[in-house]
Structure formats: structure tokens, C-alpha cells
Image 1 (cartoon, rainbow, N blue to C red):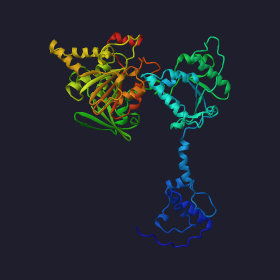
Image 2: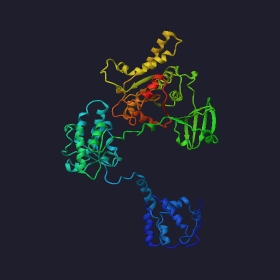
Image 3: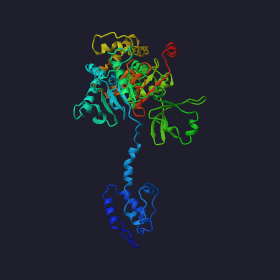
Image 4: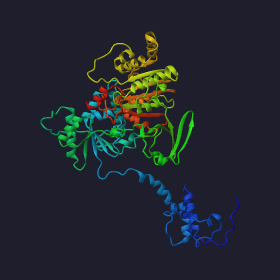
Length: 571
């Protein structure tokens, strides 16, 4: 690099104070902003004559915009040269604070938690942001009564107990005065929780209406909420409970009560991702001019760019049906910047493309079979009402890829054992025999698939049934922890009854070469305290959308029978 030319004019002398400030600035780790400020101020003719090409060049707009607030107005040009204030550093450090969520006006709310909230979500203690939490003593007593056992509720209670013990370890002394000041919820590393945890440290004797028995746990919690309202009139005290009757009684007494909503993935089930998007009627007019198309392996690809691209997701299906024109059915395979690549689908509605004798009867079933037969899709979720063909198509696709294509070694079927009516008690036999009564839907669909092959005769069908059943293993959810499935086709039936934690436990069992298919109807949830918004199936659909190796389809049309379709609409 050539040396710069010597200066043509003599620079003005520096004051001692300016020299001292220069030393202070040079110690800062960020020297680039100060150098830019120095170059910008050198451009003034009254300070220093320009001597190099960098000094002769005018500052760019971006540099001037960045350094405009950094140069402090000063009557002495020499001071402006040597004292670039560290304002850019402080502004950069303060930027995340400005983007942080502002604290609400007034005092933080005080949420009184019911026992069922802690049983439902053990992490609920750290999901109230800057607000405080109050635990009545009867809540701790009820938690102690549910800590034994191997159920999901017992595991959640034990986790809550461990979290409370870790929070109590932050106490310097075991005095009531320190306990009354509250325990910081961020002591265990949960920085998102900015409030405090308060325990009931004294006896609260608040008379309730005569119709409510005093010894019941729910009524004691209501009395605590009523007493806290009188003790802290300037603060909003809210009861949080998953029990609907508990909230009704609280509102009848004039106490504010809310449902625990942090476990809900979506507030409204209508906002759930469907996996299908209808193209507008003017799609070709708005995107045809810049569209590229090519064929590869008998499949047509389209590269589009336009206003539709930001609304698309990977593995989302799109369709365009216009009267008098050929329909378009495609899947989004790639999104790069402002362009997306669409790939046409295989028509599984034609008999020549049938899957184990099953053909698609409507548009959504064709989309679902394209997902089920795609070896690049490792996780698939299918939702829909009764009779839409979820189990039949999934089982047919599994048999096709296990017996014919040898892509997977076997099919594993599991489901949540939640009865619709009264429980029939313990069932005899081993694991598969115990799960047999819960797998009636599997047997019905196997009967349909076996009946389709009429050319082999009675002996051939019997041999086929034996072969099919030898490739299907029925497993219970109770023994899934710690397992790893290698090269399996896993079907999780009735997945709407799973909690998000159970769904995570099952999906993480997948090993190399395994495909997991979750089936469910969000309108038929039988698990207590689960809704359409908090179901594990909803959780999985929302979290996996847009991933390149997953897909989701909501089946809308029932194909079981005209009686079943009419009953699902009017009953």
C-alpha cells in the first residue's frame, strides 16, 4: 500500500485537555466508530487540511447517518476532532432494552394458583412474566397427596415440588419476615419470570357464604383470594384454575377468575394450520409473466415470484380449480428469498396409482397420500372428522412401503388408552393382548384392505392376513420411554388425547429411517383438562409447520357412508 502524501498545511495545535481526552477514548474497545467520526470531522477545512484520498473522499450517507448523533456540537474545531464521544457504543448497548417488552403500568398482578394448574403444567410457575404468584397452604397439601405413582399427574407434581424446593433454597434464613417478602422466581435460571412467589404463612379466617362448606379445599382457596383482596386493595388479585366450576363459584362471589391459557398453542382452533391453500383465480395473470417451468422425471416444476410467496410454507399444498381449465395441484418444495418452487403431484385417485388397493376419493386424500408415500417426510399429521379415511390411508401406505417397497421393517401402532365411557377394568394377557380391545379401528381397516384382493382365493387371503399381522406390532404408551425405533413406520392413533409433553416423548423415540404419522380428531378429546388449543396434536402441527421433512393435511370430507356424513353434520 503506498504511503499518503505529506500534508500541505500545518495543523492547529492541540490543547493539553484535548490530548488527555484522546487517551481516554483510545482505551475503548470499539475504535471503528471513533475513527469514522475523526475522518468525518477532518473533512472540515478549518480543522485539518486534507492530505490523503480517504480524507478527500466525502463521507457516505450511511456513515453520516450513524455518526450524526455521535458528534457533540462544540465551538472549538480541534476538540471536535479528538473527542468523538462514545455515544454510538451506548446507543448500541441500549437498543435491546428499547426492544424489550414494557412493564405494565401500576403494580403487578397477584395470581393465586389452583392445584390443578400445577398438576397440568409443572412449568406454570415461570410463565406469568413480571406478575407475582401466591400459593395457598391447601394447594401444597393437595400436591403432597398426589406425588405418589407413575402417572403423568404424579410426575408433574414431583417436578413442581423440586422447583419449589430450589426456589426455597434461595432464602438466607428460614424466618417468616423473609418469606413474607417473596421468593424471586428467576433464582433458578428462568429469566423470563420477573415476579415473586409468595406462600401462605398465616391462618386466614374469612367467612364465606353459608352454602359453601368450610372444609372443602376449593372453598378454602376462594377464602384466601377473598382475604387477599381485602389485604391488598390497590392490587389486582386473580384466581387461576383449570376447574370450570371453581371459576364459576369465584365469579359468583365477585372474585376475578381466569383459565390457565399459557398451555394453549392457539386460542381458536380455526387458526390451526390446514396444510392446504387455495390459489386466487388470477394466479396465472399475476405470476405467469415471471414464472419458470421445467420437467424432471415426469414431474413438472414451477418457479414463481410474486405477492403469494410470503404466505407459503415448505410442504404446503396449493390448488387451483377453475371451470373450463385444467386444475393445478402442487406442493411447495423450496422457498428462496422472494421465489418458490412448486412441484406437481402424483394422482393417487387413479386406479393405476392405488396404494395397497386404496385410491383417493377427494382432493385432500390425494394430498395426504402424496405425503404418506414421500420418503423425505419423516413426520406427518392428519386431522379430520370421523370417516375421512385417516387410518385406512395411513395403514395402506404403511403396508405398501413395508411389504412391497421394503422401505421400513415393520409397522408399530399405538394410541392413548382413554375410554369414552366407563372403564371395563384390567385386561388379561400380555401387552398386545391388553391393547387388542383398543385397536378395533385397526382391525376394521385391515379387514377392508384384505377384502380388496379377491383373486387369490380364501387360502391366499388367509396367508396375506397372517403376513400382514406379522408385520404390525401393537405397543402401549406406558413403555415408550427410553426406546428407539429404527427403520419403523410408527402410527400414533387418537393423538388428540396426548399432552404436549407426551407428544414430545413419542416423537423423540424416532431413530434413523423412521416415519411417524399422527392421526386425530380435535373434536373428540377425552382427556381431562385438554382442549383443542392445548392438545399435543395441535402443539405438534403448529411447531412442525414449514419444516422441510414434515407435512400436515386437514381432511374435510367424510367418505365413510352417507349415514355417517349426515350424522356428523346434524348430531
